Length: 293
Image (cartoon, rainbow, N blue to C red):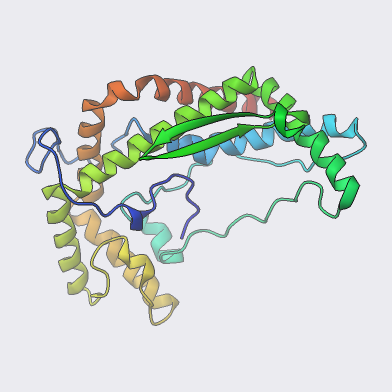
């Protein structure tokens, strides 16, 4: 499966029930759009895919320069300012990728070098102090989401100095992460509303019937298709291609995103400030990356 940083794991989002203020199948706001229906919550996915990577790549030379003053080094990382992958919010949605990779994804990048690799004992402890500072000097923020708590941390030391250089302050960085978590939670609530709707049930039933007609009966939903044991790679690619075709024939992804757009627009006041903050951070990071390049 593709790397996904948002908390929208498909298997965790099968909920039941709905409330009367949610758009339902037949609602005039739920329209077919053959283009991409943008969701306000897309800002969180873009930050996860692009913003966090750019944060690492833009801070790494700053951290390395600082660490050199302590007699150490720090690995330099590189990230693409526009590298956004298919979110697969409703399962597989890329015909070209399905034909080439089946339910997998493009080859993953090589693992980055581990900071301080090979160090041990007192030398490792000194490296960690130089990199992240003392525990008491680190900043944290707790964010209430989905009935639980997400804790974000901003290091001190060289890493903290780099974050402050990039975001204006370590607190600004934490503010963006907190907003990001709240948008993720909002995105999950939107998806839950969709999955509780009659539109969702009807479309998934049609998708399942379509898949059965092509000879693939094991998956009851687009999410289940990832866990099926296929005969071989060619069989998986054929199933993946059928999956995308069955969605495309009924404009399923567009209908689902239109439903979610209506739901998110109705509840947007809850999260509009956070979206503005995260989008501003993304724009700033992309501008800085392009200027640096």
